[in-house]
Image 1 (cartoon, rainbow, N blue to C red):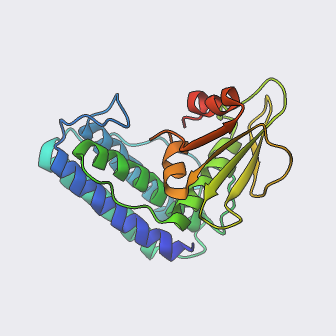
Image 2 (cartoon, rainbow, N blue to C red):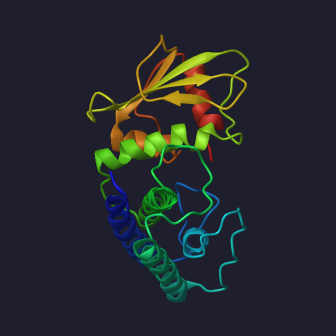
Length: 246
């Protein structure tokens, strides 16, 4: 996928998120994030959108804290979220391709603009799923190629950082496989007492494998649902459920 594809996905997913939040109501519980109500989801995601837009708009070279969301609720909060989302989409669309700014994980990306467009597309898709879970009914589909990209970003980006808690006292090997998404949709994750190292290939004898259709596996690895298929060492597979949160 390229930056234009991610921008299109971000645009669509944010509008779906807002529609689901409005239908659910801001008092509704978010079953995929039990500590949240829809108002918390909107405030968090809107603040993230504005935070991300600032790095790109100002070519900001260093990390900076999130801003505080406004004290709004109900329809006014939904409107604020939509304004935040539109600000992000418009900022990314207008940014020069060679803009230089801070990014925060090492997954391969061709540029900072590509990083932020990709990252916010996945951020918004996962939280759109949360909003639709709060609303109830059928969730919007996630394209297999986009899901595979999100798994790759999670394994080779987020969990490559020192913050990852997915570690083992002795070296272990975990396989992650997106079924029906092409022969390259497989990762080998080497676990040690350091941050995991994931490569996008099938290498070595894995002690456990997490697998399933790409969209289901994507949501499972983001701890939104159960892993469809777990084989091998169940304790090693359970490590992800216990420690894989971001």
